[in-house]
Image (cartoon, rainbow, N blue to C red; front, side, top):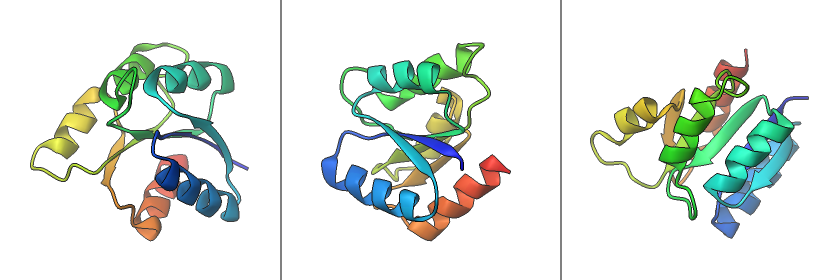
Length: 120
């Protein structure tokens, strides 16, 4: 069973994603801000990270950059999640270190396809 680190500060989004991911057989570890996300990524070594980009303490852009420059975590795929669907946001996410990027509200089927593609 693959372990996914979900870094999400919004309780409704977090609860929905946890339930849907667990129903699909994923183990889910949760962080509420970017700093906690970096710490849990380093200690839990998840198979994949779902990273909200608009986080408190340390935003997702910075957290992804830290994880991708750390020799212990650089290999972990990160999918950036953001309510921002502006031109250039996807590119900014990829430049920050995300391996893929998706918009909120989450289309669960599309997100699951991205997760499966990065885990295989």
